[in-house]
Image (tube, rainbow, N blue to C red; front, top):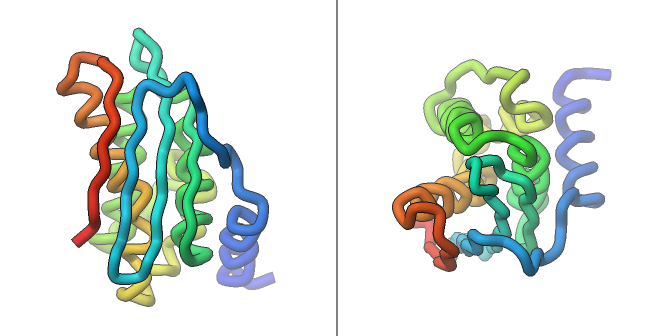
Length: 156
């Protein structure tokens, strides 16, 4: 099996059988992201413990296979990780997608499957929507000294 085929299989698996899908009532971060140009939407529920560990990451959303697979992959990559490490994972993913950097499979896990999306510039925003939404939520959470936050943003 070719590497491109394997990556497509990973993306379609996450799209058809999303991980961590559904609202979480005990989340202390709730953040929505929308890309009005293509209609992709994602809502994240994150639970960050007092010792700054992402103990749960859930989502709901709709949109293309890339956006929905990306958020599923992302929730798996960050659950159980310290917020500082999640920041490194976000930076690594964004560098791979936006700057063409070589990906670190150890940090990204299945996220490396989205590397091929770079060949389709119009679809890059689909892949990064959830990651930008996550970054915004975690940044606001840190600024609020760990308080409960709810917010939304629109990709431009």
